[in-house]
Image (cartoon, rainbow, N blue to C red; front, side, top):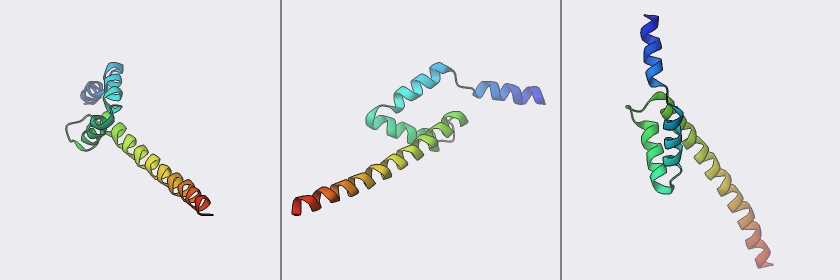
Length: 84
């Protein structure tokens, strides 16, 4: 029983070449976002890639929120400075 679970875990391990291709494809501008969404929510994707894609989506949302905060904060200050 233990050997069977070890064999299943060994087949799900991604090699460094798989990770290099995954990260390269995810870094492409529009296609990368689509692929990360597919990898995060597809049932046929390996659990390693699925968790990585969900983490990347979480980081993208956090970065977007921080960027919008800076835009509104400094953009609003610039607008107020130009009015006076």
